Every structure is written in C-alpha cells, then in structure tokens.
Length: 427
Image 1 (cartoon, rainbow, N blue to C red):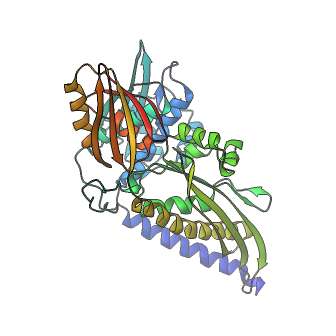
Image 2: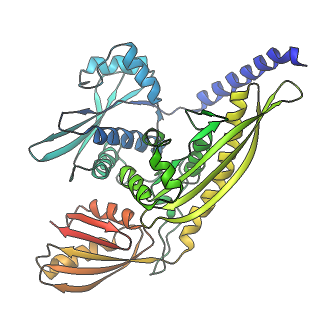
C-alpha cells in the first residue's frame, strides 16, 4: 500500500483545493489590510505594537471583514521596499492594497507632543484611493492599557459601531437579568490564551492547540480574545512558565502587559506513533491548561486532555493531534468560563478623590449605574473632597476600571485597581 502514497497525497490536495475554493466563493466580505501604525519618536515601541494588535483584533472580531494575514503584509513590505513608517502617500497605499489583493487598507497614527497623546485611524478604499472613514481619540495616559482603550474607541467610531447591533455572525448575548443578583455576561471578559507547544523536542512556531482554543472561544461569543501576535513574544518566555507554576507576580505582569481579565496558560506536546495501514502517519498529543483570574490570581478551572491525529506526514499529523486536543480543551474551558456567571456578584469598594461637591458624587453614581455588568451602586460616605462608593458587580476590578476610564462624563482617572478595591480621581 505504501507505493500508492503519492496518489493519496494528490487526492487530499485536490480535496483541499476544492474546499478552499468553495469557502472563498461563499465569503463575500471585503478584505482589509491593517498596516503598522505611524508614530513619532516620542511613542514607545510597546505602545506602537499595542495599538497595532488592538486595531487588528477589533476589526477581526467584528467579523465584517477578511483581514489580510500579518506575515503576508510584512512579506510585501519587505519585497517591495515600502517604508514601514510614514506611509501616508495615497498612491503607495493603493499599490500595497493591490499587491495584497485587499479592498481596503487601514492606516493609523500615534502622535505624542507637548503633553498631548492622540491616536488616529483611517480606512482607505484601494480602488479610489480615497479615505472612506476616519476617527481619532485622545490617549489619557502613556500606558499600553490606555493606548488599547483609545484605539478601541477610535476604531468603533471609524466603523460606525457606536450604536449598531452585533453582527449576525456573532452569537447574541443572553438577556441580562435585573436586580442586585444580575450578573455580567462573562463573554465580555478580555482573555489571553498562551499555550506553547513542542513536537518531541522541536518547538512548534504556530501552536495548533492554542489556535483551536481561541476559535472555540470566538465561536462561543468571547470576542475580546487577545490577538496571537501580542502573545508571541511571551509564549515561550520565563514569565509564562512562572505563571503556569502559579507565580502571582508573573500573572499580574502578564495581566498588566496584555490588559486582560483572565489568562489561559498551559503547555502541549505531541509525539509520533508511526505509519498506519494505508500509508497515513499517526501522532498523539496532550494539552494541559488552566484559567487564572488576573485580579486575584485565583484558578477558575484546570484540565488535561489527550487526542490523536492522522495525516500524510509526521508534522501535519502532529498539528492535527494538537488541534484536536485544543478543540477538546476549548469546549471544556468555554463551559467553565460561562459558569463563572453562576457565581454570586461580588463587591468593589471605590474611593473617590477630587470631589468638589455632593452633586459631583451623585453625577458619578448615576454614570456608574449605566455601566454594563454593574448591578447596584451606593454612596457609602462623603466628606470634604473624598467619597466612598460600594459597587455590586460580577466584573473583575480590571474590567470595571476599563469601563470607568471610558466614561464620557464625568471624566475619571483610575489611579489604583487591585483585589476588590479601586481608587479614582474626578477631573
């Protein structure tokens, strides 16, 4: 049977080509190429890359567009000697879009001068070379979390999603109950999936198990999953190993760097079994992972799964086995994350400074009641320029802080957020 292996391979390739052509014909969404942001010298590299990842991730999660693979963009930029910075010439943008077979090119700029920090995003139609949509946001503080928040607000405005309903491709969130026992939909949580993989002793550059888990989360409606490009730098680092071992400092470090409510961290490996009847190669994989809530380093769930995979070659069968293990783990973790909503709502104690009058405190209280995931708000104490407010919510402190930062009125600066306490300043 081994001598017929080339025929099997040719048949498999033909099936794959037919399948891909059918999918391509069905997917009529416009194609978008997201270019690396322009930035002046005062903008740090981490803020620049945070903006890039946030912009690309938000557009992907709308499910309205096909987003050109980042590695393909890098390849075109390198092959045709386009400068990564300063890409403002319309003719160049049109040329890049055509080379990438994109309908739209998304460009952005970060500029920091004289105490002001601004993010600008624009969509350029490749056919006409005209800017079809644009938006800007002021960045409140020079931190990755603030940059990410500003980019999200800007791209939301740019895409006209401020008052729009979710895309039909996105599973609708369940109706929110009322009263003090009402709970935040856990699918609003921001999650990072970090699962380094090896096949025997060889690291796998694009983890299949991790990808399968992310896909399962997205299918279940968890649209705030951190883009894999943001995870690449730490996937095989010591900080990830420390977080897997339960190091609280490492967990907090990842949470700060990626701005997440939960991290799903683990490890996976595959090993060869050998050729099977019919000339196919078989591998087995094991994947272990745990979900950790970042504000208190509490483990929400942990599991380990085994799976097999068969394909024409050892490398591809290893990928299949890891993908299968990732799907099993993804299904399990989705159930565990959704079950977080069955827990009772927790309390957050908020200390407010910069209070000029009780009217200001009352205005802030009313604004807090409008936040998604906040069930009850009560002013506990008011004295001179300081007030304390008790909030009943199932949100993590970090998620609550993100929403408070995004309030249009009053303008609030979050100065500290940890455990079940938060400090803010009215501006």
